[in-house]
Length: 113
Length: 114
View (cartoon, chains in turn yellow, green):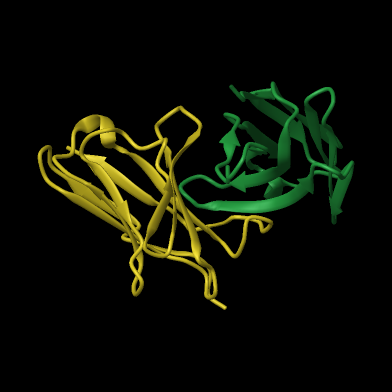
């Protein structure tokens, strides 16, 4: 059973471009969470999704950021018009139910030039 | 608002020492608490999960305790090895309705020297 997969592992964008980060949960998991780890800061919750639904997006910046978890395919975290302050490691986690441990992917390290 | 603090921020010990990492949280209304390990440039590995009704969990040389009333957890590492060198993160899941997000500490950076 493959773990949580994220791609790309590293992403370089110039200011103003779009960044798309993908997360494939563990097989059988229907809950996906996105966290961001800024340099020298702790991880911060961004958004929690179930298939086709956003359950909690209280940690998402109000502009430029969006997330989806379609019926088929991976969850996507999309950042439009990236700025240097978006440079961070973005981690995805998945779980089977609210009782289960969240299993984390290896992260996508975004660098905005 | 739940806040998680980890002390110390960094720790350097010689190989073979037993050591304790501390985690405190401000709101005792939690669903569970997890300890994770993060290696440089890598992802997060879950080490131990303690449900709010539990007092401790053990896995190999690791033992984590939870005192919910005082808002504290400790991670005990026995007979430390150089391979234990990593950042150790503590995260709590608040008990609040449908809340499933984790609130994280900043971590303790551990270096075990041969």
